Image (cartoon, rainbow, N blue to C red; front, top):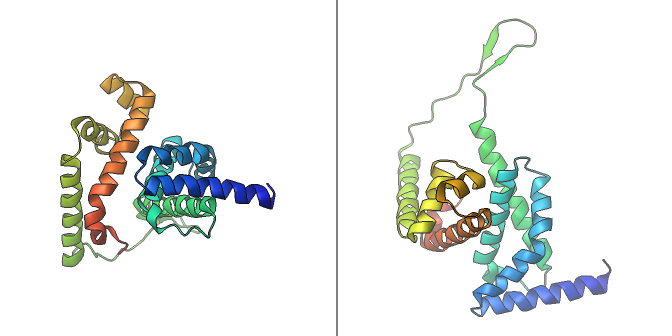
Length: 202
């Protein structure tokens, strides 16, 4: 893509962004459709599980939508969106890495197991209180969702069902599952904005 094409592409994006910021909620769908494949491909290079790829792709667009008023128009929108996607993947992989940390490993020069000693940091009053406040805010936000969105969030994140399983359970098309999940997450993000300080990085 030459320089003129890049400028034209960015001007098209800026037009849609201004429409979205002006109150046209449907306009952002143009951006999502335009960049869906390339964002999915970018995430797929970092994350192998296809369900995680789909979830992180949706999360990227939700974050972009909610942060749209911070976008600076003298920059490339695509680069801004790619950075959001990349950071979303990095956060996901960082959290997942700690979940799978092994508690013991086999020694290279003996048959005995080498035990990794882990300091007990479980009792941290401030962190425990923060976790409780985060959970309460999230549960309250979920409780305020429309019933169909509440159910789909529960099945995906509570019971860890994939999209196909949710489609079968609720007897709705796969495309409807994806659309409802996207809208449910977007509503959650909007409801949790007032609790943003709770969900900032520690």
